[in-house]
Length: 64
Image (cartoon, rainbow, N blue to C red):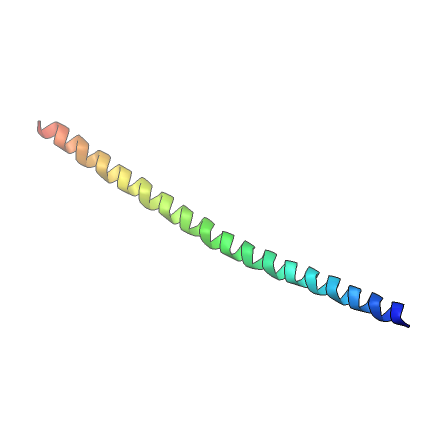
């Protein structure tokens, strides 16, 4: 009887830990998606800024 209780207790712990890991993995995946989306936006902004600065530099060079 005690063995059955211990086995059930262990199974419950393992299932809880498994569930906890799945929740953690889902949260990490969601955060990673946010990071990836923001990184893509940052790269786009950075690229646009580079184009603007290069264009301004070309205009300055033409004025000289």
